[in-house]
Image (tube, rainbow, N blue to C red):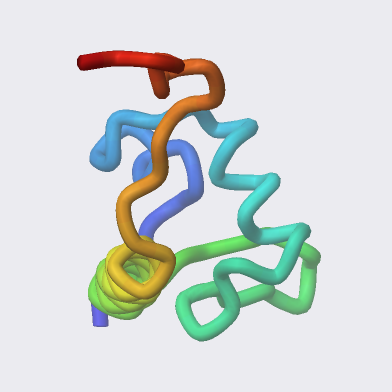
Length: 80
């Protein structure tokens, strides 16, 4: 188990610290978050990657179920 600070995790993922903290506060990340008795947050790097993979798979499946969408106004009326 590799425990890292949120700032290090954000740097490794190429996202802002604010985005990472938003994911934590919204509950999107749960299994990887470890709160110390002093209130500090640490992240289990492997668990974090697993959670993000699961979210990616969830959204990919959801997109497939919804099917392709056409942007509004892209259908031409009276096209030959």
